[in-house]
Length: 102
Image (cartoon, rainbow, N blue to C red):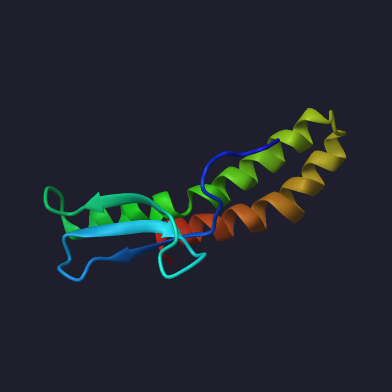
């Protein structure tokens, strides 16, 4: 499957004046700017959390896409349990930590 979104990983960076976060790829100093989250109308913690969640989107997509492909192969129950514990849980935990900035 071909994806047409900006490839990840993405990072988020707070502006010098603290009024917004810019989310973009890591190909150059900024590369492609994907989104900006403004902190003017919400508290800074919520803006930072929103920016982190957006920055984790490509990795969240990959985990879900791979799981969907795996399940589409009609795996056995034992294979599903093994995949969940050995592959999906560690990867999804790591991506969620990025999204939560842990």
